[in-house]
Amino acid sequence: MCKAIKLTAPGKEEFQKERKLFFEMISQFILTHDLS
Image 1 (cartoon, one colour):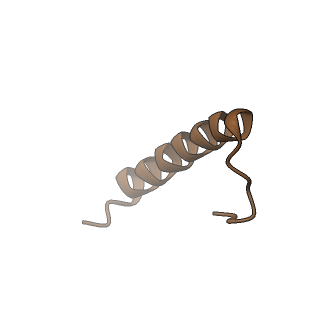
Image 2 (tube, helix red, strand yellow; image 1 turned 90 degrees about the vertical axis):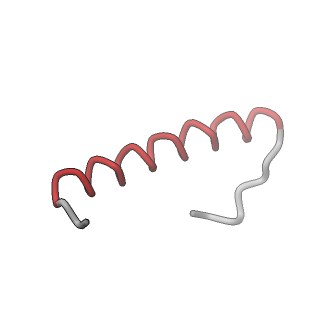
Image 3 (cartoon, one colour; image 1 turned 30 degrees about the vertical axis):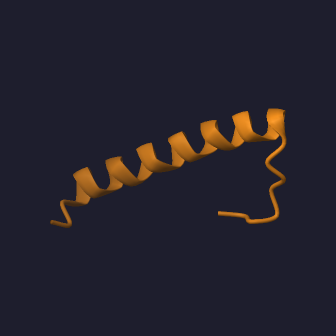
């Protein structure tokens, strides 16, 4: 992820949303490709 993001109050909330979305995408990718 971009480390240049400033974690201000509003920025932090956006960051949390982005991170949640990012992890959901990773989870879906792992599930669909079954990398276990």
